[in-house]
Image (cartoon, rainbow, N blue to C red; front, top):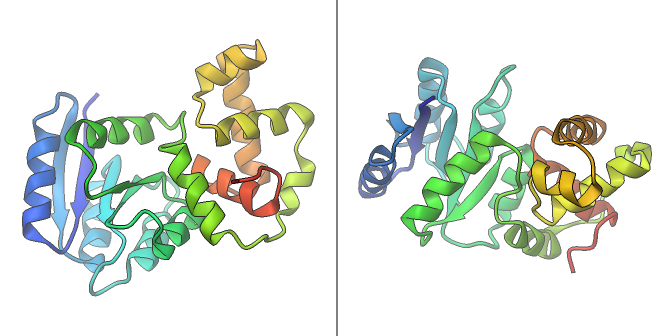
Length: 213
């Protein structure tokens, strides 16, 4: 299966560079580009990509606002935010909104490709240490009612998700089958009203269930 990617960035050179890297990889193809927030909404609606790679600071429609619109359909694409600064408050808002992860502009080409494959698979937190750092900088200690509804095993799974373990690695850690872990992860996301793993992990940090420090 070939993963379909849309690139959204207001810099032509950046879009061209990303396209060259992605199109050179087997199993990945760029199906469209956008130069602003309005354009990425149109591209996603018409092209139905698996992954959207986008700048969080976009003209026409604000990046976080565009992300919320992109995530509103029943089967939205996975979204990876591209940013210059890892401690950007807009990146944190994007994670809270439900994106699958973020990358720094200085990320190596092989890391970019691996990130696209990782979020498409959806079974591992992308760059867990970076998410933890963001939570330590921006977390506001909000109340997350769903945390209290987690079973003991689901709580264990959430802690391991926060460490960045994949479903398979969590299964080994807890000595159960991968299918069982998939079910637990799905239940954790549902109880925390989270669309993606980063959103659930951010909720765990902000509630104090897991300490980012």
